Amino acid sequence: MLRDGELDIRELPGIAGGRAPGGRSSQQDDLICLHDARWATSLVVLADGMGGDGAGELASGGVIHAARTLWDERSWRDQPGALFLETLCQAAHTEIRRRNAWVNAEPHSTMVALLLRDEQAYWAHVGDSRLYHFRGRRCRSVTRDHSLARLKLERGEIREADLARDPDQHVLLRGVGGNEAPEVEHGYAQLRPGDGFVLCSDGIWETLSTAELGALLREPDLYEGVRAGLMRAAARGGAHGDNLGLILLQTEPPGTWLGRLMSRLTLT
Image (cartoon, rainbow, N blue to C red):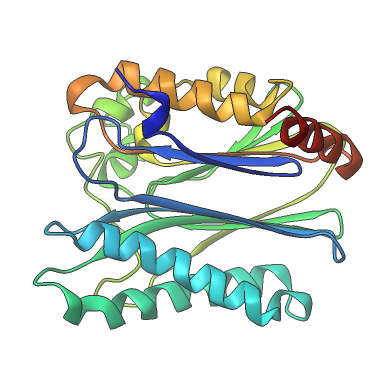
């Protein structure tokens, strides 16, 4: 049973992100949530590391390090959104490759990133960590996993309902930190009222349905939405469940979320 002390949750206006070990002894999921109020810009990034012998934590940490570095350089102010995210993915790949000498293993990672600015949403992903775009109760789009199981689905060899349980789901066709530079897949949307986004690792989407993820976005408090999602996924994953990483983002007016955040700080 997952305990509150095992949850790592952070919150910004309109954003909440968290992770939990699930049934694993190590934590290979990592994430970062960033916001610049002056420029009304947000960046959230989630990574799921792999490689064994400590390499998974090293890889996902490399993705987050690259995100923080590029954010602090503020290149997102001048670059087109898609170009900034492509730069981020390639920088994460380079950082993980730089860390190869730190361990006797081959660290690599999935990653999914979302940039919001000027009423536009840009996202990019490599691997099987996902982004869901909701408008109200409707899921408008989901990123396409870069896995062998997804390829089998597209070939008609398995059903959508069997995807999460297929033995080839964890055989990835793309990643960051491998021998070759990653082939990044991009997405874009013009923001509309009621838009929300879920970013998550496979430990979440394999245990929670699309409808359940959408319901988390409708929680009055996104912090509690993340907590509920992590607790539910951990319970379903059980003693051998995967690491869990989850980010919820709503595009409500900043003042709404600032009031909720200040209320939380006052109460605590």
